[in-house]
Each structure stands twice: as structure tokens, then as C-alpha cells.
Length: 267
Image (cartoon, rainbow, N blue to C red; front, top):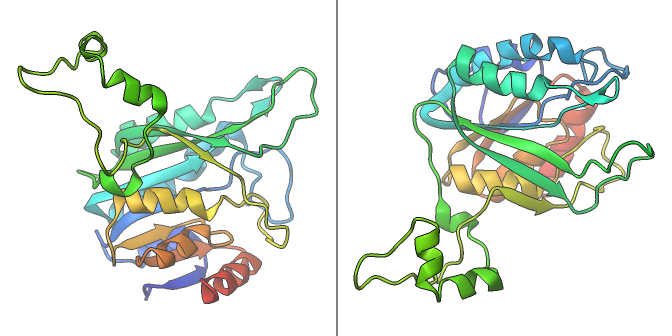
């Protein structure tokens, strides 16, 4: 039996099959990206890009099964360069999640890394972004106020001129004016966050806690359940715990589970 606020060293298709139907509020995860390099553990980061969609679909079916009707599935992923060009497996997967699995597609986000690793190739630019895709089952929660940001100076100036509103199709009715929200501006779909810099982390590609934190705040409420089927070093579980959410995580590497549990102990 899968219990809340625990991590499990097991394949997540099996683990999720042991969870109750419609019991999860949010699935936030970053699965192994397609990669032609061989890692120590078969299946952990060495999925052929051409076979990636077929590999991921069994996980997606279980994710959809365990999500509540108002649950969201948020996927952090990136593409790969194969034979000199960007492989399209990420976009093939997005299409399959909607058309084959039946998820609804809410939004795409760009995670812009403040400290991206420079590329050595003279024929490529530095890869500074990753994708985050937000899907949902039947409906979704969006806590706008929890993810608001400071207004840009240029935005504040635009509020002063009615022609700017008219130009963008937001002409106010008579007597209405555009004013600042005291809680801040609406969030956008570009997130400026650094990569994780923990040299002791055994995971090969950890994402920062702040990335999970942003989406957990946006899509869940306190005591909601957050599931990560590829929990890795536990960033999503740490974020969930800090925000007063319950969590469940799966990973097939015991070293990752051990490290994640140690992080949770001090969170």
C-alpha cells in the first residue's frame, strides 16, 4: 500500500498502479530525457529519442488514472541534438499526451536558466532553456495570487495610456480604468531560475526546488497530494513539504531515494 509522505524505490508504473483512482492533486515530474549516452543503470537516461514516446506512455496512462478530475500534470523536459539537429521527440510526446492519452493542454513554459552550462561546440549556441508543459485532466486549479510578481516599469507606464489598451484589444468600458493589482502583476510563462548547484547530489540532472515550488503554489492548496513518478533527488518532495502539501515519490535508484530522504529530514 502506498502511503502519503513516503518515497519508494520501485518502478513508478507499478507504484502508481497501487495508488487509489483519482487520489492525486498534482503530478510534477522531470523524467529522464532522451539521451544516446549510456549511464550505469539501463533505462535511466539512455532512452532512444525515436522510442521515447512509446517508453513514456505507460507512465502517462497511470498518471491520468491517479489524478483527480481537477488535477494537473506538469512535465519538465528538454530535447536533444541528434546528428546536428534538434530531435522532435518532446513535441511528439506533447501531441501524444493530448491525442492518445487524453490530457488537456493548458500552457507551455520556458525555464530560462541563469547559470546555464556553456556549450563547447562552435556550431551551436548555448542551450539556456528547458520546457515545462502543463496538462490537466478535466479542470485545473490556478492560484494567481500565489505566483504574482513585481510590475515591470514599462508595464506600469502602459497602464497610463488608453491607446495601449485599445491597441491590444482590452479597451475599457466607459468609466473603467486599468490599475495595478496591489498583490502584483500576473505571472508570465518564462521562469528565470538558476540550475541546481549541489555538488553532493548523486542525481545527474536535478532541477531546483524553486521550479517545483512555483508550480506547486500555482496548482495546489495546502494538504493536497503531490506525486513525482521520477522523484530523483527529491526536489519536488522537498518543495511540497515546505509548502504544507503531502507528497509521494518513486525512483528506481536507491541512492537517489536515500539522498532525497536525507533532504526531507532537514526540510
